[in-house]
Figure 1 (cartoon, rainbow, N blue to C red):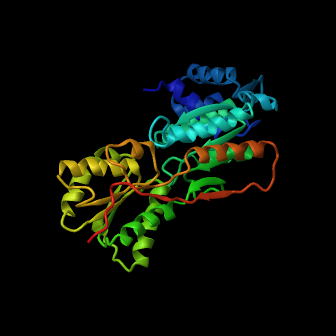
Figure 2 (figure 1 turned 90 degrees about the vertical axis):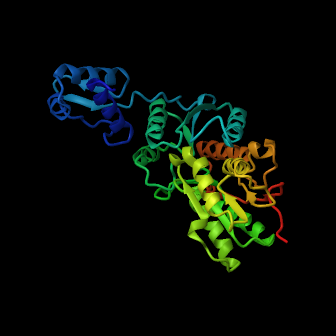
Figure 3 (figure 1 turned 135 degrees about the vertical axis):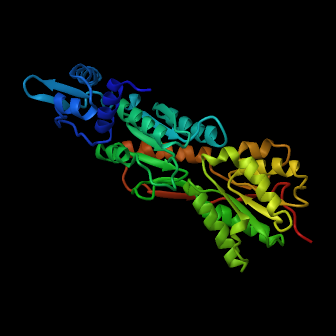
Length: 361
């Protein structure tokens, strides 16, 4: 549990980094802070002293305490010392090591440093990561948004980067409420192609498993619905299993119920990604549902787990390392003053045939 002093320190620091308090602005008086937080003058002074020591505040005798920008460890414009911040939802699993490898390889070519953080798809952790990047004074930023299909309470931090002319680009998704450049897979097309492939193999009862707190899930659902509509197949709400970051823990149990309920009807499933696809494979084994004889499955993202699993998953491509390189290239060009850079890029997915889809007789 935070001490009272730590609460004051964190709140004032957050207000400075998010732009609520701007550089040169006077912060509330010690007396006002005492009243706000219900603490002693000594506690307030301790927080102000530490914030001053870290360069967030400066005190003028007889005048008051003002916001300072001395905390920014800018590199003075030397291109050999520039640092690019990278914030992704995860670091060490699924497609993220490949994306980061792409970013790192491109940054190394121009001697840029990399400052890495992850959010675990949690907005509180995203806030900490953004505050770290602002405190450090990164020269540019590459971000994978957190819970990109939901309202994001950290928008003020992104606006702070804009106000400071720190270029940033988003990968995999973006916040629709922000005008922001991005590199994304065409997620609508990915799920559309997956569904269309199953339809071409004679499947008419096709389910989908979608993660709905991320924009990718919303668009992959859209692609699925689009393919059904084109084929004049009915959309069945009961053939949809949705989940989010928190309920992912219970996905295996929810899958068992979903597959049991739809066992006599479904012949195929479009999965949110390869990770979910392989979870479906595992649950089908437990329920003695044979793949692809009883149920066809398509994943998405062409991840290493799809290639190295016991069964070769049919999936769709994702640019991964190329996306990382392209995002790093965009930031470097932006810092070099290049104009007319593309503000949106969609990579086109390609179907990769595996062992998990069969044609119906």
